[in-house]
Figure (tube, rainbow, N blue to C red):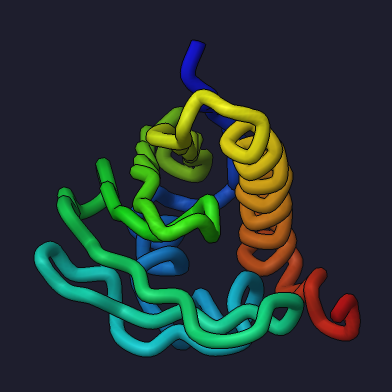
Length: 145
């Protein structure tokens, strides 16, 4: 069995606002990354910097369908191979958006399983921080690292 997961949350904001908070580097840096260089645009490579990890994290953006879907690849395992991240956005009602994030592509070994668990928690943390940022204008990561 290959390691993979999906996490999701509902945010009390319109889909366009939730989507923009993910693709816009200034907003993404307000709740998830310490720095995000470049917007998530199809075919582009961007760089994310996290306060808890050394160095830069390159992210290759594969697909962007506005207000619907983002697909990206990165070395999510930290082992020299890429995993795939898919983000799906759905309107529940005009002021409520569901966002689901899945990640797959780890090797089916102990390190792959450990990395998938770590990233599962990381993406759920991202979604909780996104919700707090958009609904309450709070950066939950500030001062955490």
